[in-house]
Image (cartoon, rainbow, N blue to C red):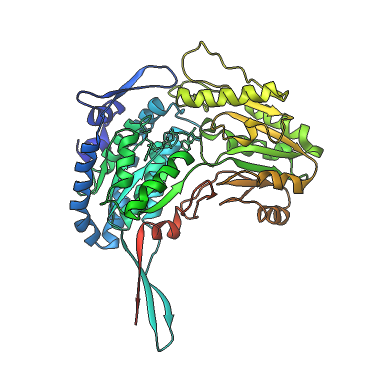
Length: 476
Ligand code: NDP
């Protein structure tokens, strides 16, 4: 398919046809309907070898281009994604399940082009470290070589871009390994971007976990960018030891939000809602447990219920919907188990909590749970779905201690009418990012990364570029 056809008349079906398996593929079903979306190629470890070799072969030429030339290609990649935005969004919606509208499929594809442009616009120059007449020391960031990008199923396109855009900008070639749940979206995105990149620089291998494992032990791969579960992240740390690979690990979390007693419940309710329910709760840095002071507890709960009741959930391609299904049965079962644990403990379910097990699709209705114990499984385990526990507190120090008690620390938030007070509380929270009066608002200019079990390494901004290079000091 040429770039010209992408710009004018590409449909989701054409994109699919360009990336689907010719034979021996794996059926990918729409999680909202159970209908066949397409057949993903079942690539093997042998296919991975071919892809890594292509990456090795093409990297030297790509790395030898000027930074300006590579930025120009990233800008063209953003144009190509924009030209194919609607078919990409339709395919993403069908495969991942997320609606076209709301902060979902169209939003995700828009973020892909925005991130490509932003990544091409940061300035990264040689930095002088010491220049005192005797010593002149500078630091530069050279290409790593080949970077492996292993991604999840919740934001498959956007997270792929987060991984590949800085890698490409820094002169690396890339091998992408998408989640086995959402390979078609990533294959289509890579297909579109490859219309403007030299052959072999950006490769994708749509295999299963064994392909990811082979990528993370491969001696020709210098770095792994990984987003996914903490369990797999730990396996990648072990697998990387033999080749001393660089790693950036974004492993999800269990983000706390703390509302202070001076917050205005009605004013914050909608942002609280989307902080928790963006992508139907399937977001690494979503608000997953909300701590609310006794003084305004009932008002915050009522305001959240009011917002929740206005948000339609349903099949992604139906324009009115803003919430969709869980992406897969395993995730549905996790949410169901955790909500049932909350109910069994006597917590108060404010909205729903009653899925229709016989209906098609993995829909779990928007569920708000009040008066729940701080150590209930729905609070201390990551639900990764549309069920938010709202924990009542009387002592702010205790709420902060509870927020910090878990072994993860990706995002968090503080909600208050007094920004200075919110900042003081924010400084006491153990998380890579603390947002004030919003949750999960990632920005390509602002570094983002986790602490504790949420992983390490920063993405985005200039820090994110540096993480995709090898630092070299020249001193003399
Ligand atoms: P995984 O961590 O299992 O999968 C993420 C990626 O890693 C996939 O591409 C997967 O491939 C690949 N992979 C699997 N095994 C290996 C391995 N040994 N070495 C290298 N790569 C490997 O996440 P899941 O999709 O199974 O989700 C499980 C849980 O993780 C969710 O319930 C959620 O809590 C959390 N999660 C967090 C996300 C985040 O954004 N931080 C995103 C998604 C999930 P394959 O799919 O083929 O197995």
